[in-house]
Each structure stands twice: as C-alpha cells, then as structure tokens.
Image 1 (tube, rainbow, N blue to C red):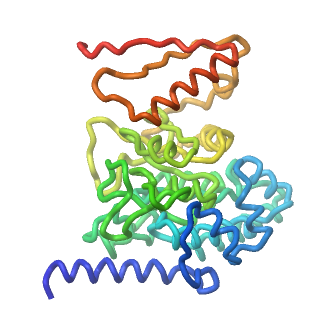
Image 2: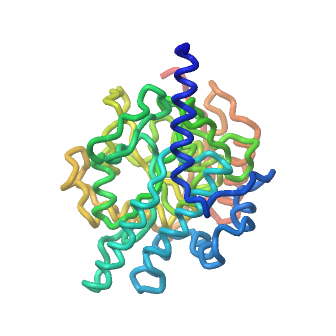
Length: 358
C-alpha cells in the first residue's frame, strides 16, 4: 500500500471512530438539503420539545441559574446539548472529538453535589462548554488536523481544561479546525470541512470555525476558541455571534498544542450567542481566582463596571480603510450601519485616516 493510500485509510478509520461516538438513536437516517442547520435540528425528531427549548436558551447565566434553582438538572441540559451537537456534526462537520458519556457522568456528579450540599459546584455550574481541538483533554487526541497525530491521546488535561472543570463546567465536544490553525477556514484531512451553521454553502471561518459553527447551530451555549490574527473574531462574525479576543493572561491557554512557539502570543477567548455568556466566563475566571491555578494568568479581576454602558454619550473612532487592504463591500456596509446606529443613539462616530508611514 502506498503512503498516500495508508494516510487516506488512517483518516477514514478516524472518521469512522468519530461517527461511532454518536449513539444510534441520535443519528440522522439521511442528510437532507438545507439552508440553516437549525431548521433540520428542530424538525428531525431526535430532540424532544424540552431539549429544543433548553438549547434555544442563548444566555449561559440564565441556563446556569435554572440548574442552580433545580428548574432544570445538569443531566437534562447536558443531554440536550450532546444530542444537538451530534446532529449538528452530521450536518456541518463542526466537531473533532465527541465524549458524550464522559459529559453525562460529569453532569450526574454535578446534580449530586447540588443535591447533597445545596450549593453549586462553581460559577459555571452545569454549563455545557465546547472547546477548540487545540486544547488537550486526557485520553483524547489533539490532532489539530494532522494525520500523524491520530492515536496519540493526551496524557493529562491542559490547565485551561482543568480550570473550566473546577468552575463547574461540563465539557462534551472538541471543535474542528484547519490543519495547524492560523487559517480563516476550518478544513483538514482528518475531519474534513466545517461549514457555516447558517448556510452550508459558506465556510464557518477559522481557525475557531468549528467552534463558531457549534454555537451558531445552538449546539453550544458557550464555546472556547483561540485567536492571534482573527481566529475567534472571523468565525464569530461569519455566524453572527459574540466573540472576544482578550488580552494575554486573561483566559488560560498554553500558547498552542504540540509545543508550538509564537512571537505574538495567541490567546483563548469565548464565542457565544449573547454578550452575557461572554461576560459570565470572564467573571467566572475572576471569581474562581484562575490565576492561582495557572502561572501565566494575570491576577486582574473582571472589572464589570467598565463593561457597563456609560451614562454620557460616547465617541467612537471609525477606520473605513487602512490604505493597504480595502474592505469587502459587506464589511464596509456593516461599518456604515454601525455609524448610523451610533448617530441615532446620540453618539458620535469619528472618522480618521491611518498613517501607514510609521
């Protein structure tokens, strides 16, 4: 067998292994043509009405509070998001590793803790969190799209994974990426193409494209991606989501998987369907004193007062063109729309030119 044939067989075996992680009762009998993956998810009959209702909640804080009040159990919530992610994977190729049984065991433990102590396990109690493939989770591969990294499971969790678990989160899937990251699309030879949750004819973006597709299909209420040159912001933009590229030292991340080194450090950051979910993660890391668990994190609390709307009118700088790369027409239109909204709100959009001469 030629090397090319061996590699293709390796990829096919990994994809078959991935497909086997989806319980038979969560599998689509056929893949219909669709425009928006959410339409199929809502009508395929795999999710119950309650599960559709649970996964339609966009604010992670609201969902967490429903679990703390025992209106919903962590097991019910985790089951709903696992099922939705399983269906989404079959439609848009958003996942790499799926570990539903592990997630359901974790959810049962959280329900038991709440029942026994009367207290939540942390500020993210029961919140299902999807995470980019580049984060290592014990016992799972971290291929970042490389065939040569198949069947090399992580021996330990990344620090960021342990911190999320310590805050009460439930991890259940890792999300698709481009090979080696650093691309604005999410295709690789191991897991194939992750497409847009809102239109399968469009890309999901990258390199956190699978993560954005999960959130865009409401198969995740809070996703963790990484960013160095737009890898959270681009896919968030392509699927109408909130994405945050924090400063270095705010969200735990060991630079990247497989000991890659960077001159400009990448950071981890959240993707979500609501701004409140983004704020919940940042508040939780501060409340849980994550910097005590990770030496690279800065001991800087989340200053909520700085994220509230000011009482005074604001002045926003607007760059329409940097003189080097002309924005695409949809981007220029979006800037004009924002400027118009600011004006209608009594705020001021201030245009200025960027001097590229240094």
